[in-house]
Length: 109
Length: 112
Image (tube, rainbow over the protein chains, first blue to last red):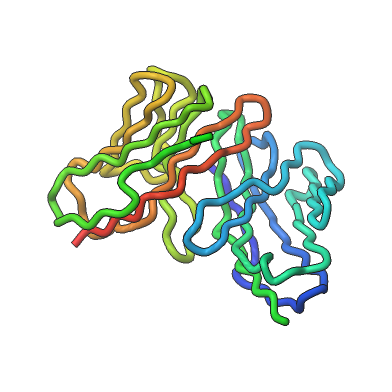
């Protein structure tokens, strides 16, 4: 099974940077995903890491260290629309995705 | 582009009743999944199917059943609903190349 931990809540100011950490313990590992979910909506894909290192996509970046069982999602130049829940998910060898409980990010003006 | 369609969007039903949540995808993805999402617990996998004709149990399968007669459809059935099954249910399908999940809009189920 998977054990995935991430902070429950984070608050930041518009224009700032926020880093959401995720640690995991798995019996098999085949990639780590980050999803964004606005209240009342379905999750949407943000990023995917399978090798160690940083993946950058515009204002969002995701980092993975497989040896440490650690990932983070970096959100830069925060906007009000970035207020959402961010879900860390780990894929096992059967292509099943297990999710952490999510981190609710609140962006304040 | 439809993607994944779930029905119903919302439903209230009495405990003990049978309920089927429907899920259809038009992306020809082999893998499909059912998750439930509860406050503070995140998304938990109920059942999954890696390809038509096969299904498997996820983290919280008790009280639920699924079938996968063809590639497009993956219904979830609650044989006898209980209040603890009150939740938001998400169906998802997976691109075999990256494993990225594509989600339906969710079905909000309330069992009284």
